[in-house]
Image (cartoon, rainbow, N blue to C red; front, side, top):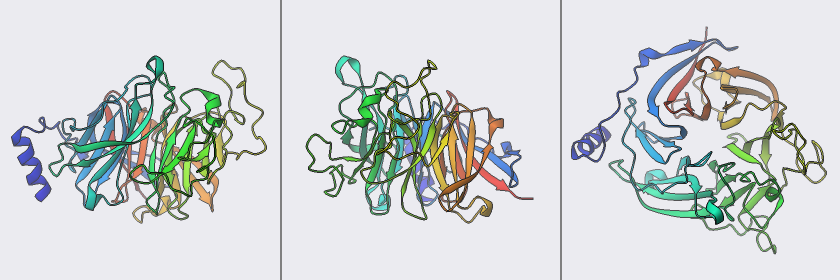
Length: 386
């Protein structure tokens, strides 16, 4: 009730534009699956190329990023706010723009919101990934005191391969996945932040126990390297380990279990080829000594994106599964495990005919997915068992 009163006062004061019409739950669709009918309910529509969603605590609603540069609040009943103020200017070209959003592990106390985005300013008009944080105002109208805590250096992207998922682990360290800006060899260069997973404190400081701290010619932020374009990442809730998924070139999308200081091979090791149908020039094979092979690989690329482990009680057949969005194949991929080994795959939501950019498990036990379209939609996804 307090939140609704706050929103009403904010709206009347003119801080927010009129809300877009809420999408009715009567629009729920049902699609077949191996475990029962999948229910798909639109929560909010009219999003411009949405990239990521985060859940405010206590059923207060959602924050959603739009790649052109807007952060939006969606109320629990699906009403869409005007763009929030205090968001950094982004480099919205090609794959660049406003990307991931996560809340601080201590959000109820500090109200910190973390954003990743493409930032310009490089030589010749190039860009790189940046991460910053700001405090969400009580009236939900914007972010205050936004500060950049990480910059990908050097800036090499002309519009491709920014990454960039944000994941807090159980100890409060922040992991950031960084693409290699379509500059392949940089993924192996320890003096650059291209093609890396980095690990920092919540304020941007570098932990002393990072693997390359004190090593000459190496960036201390690096946790792992040899990544291509990791657009999905999530913490395994049963083991506490970081899992990452990344786009291969033509073929070779992969899942990796990220370990301290390890080299994941790109571009020396890959299951894919160039879009020209020629081999990757630097590639030495699918596996290369001294590098970690993929935990799971798709020889034909679905163009994987957001990633979520399912550990809720609401839909028991989904427990210990992982869900991954697919852009090119326009599906939600469900992977089933025995231990950490993938033993079964199912493709869902092809009926939507939409690029699935993000997938998260909500606090209510439903899955939430975002479609990367000019008129993108936030959907709530459940399972109706026979």
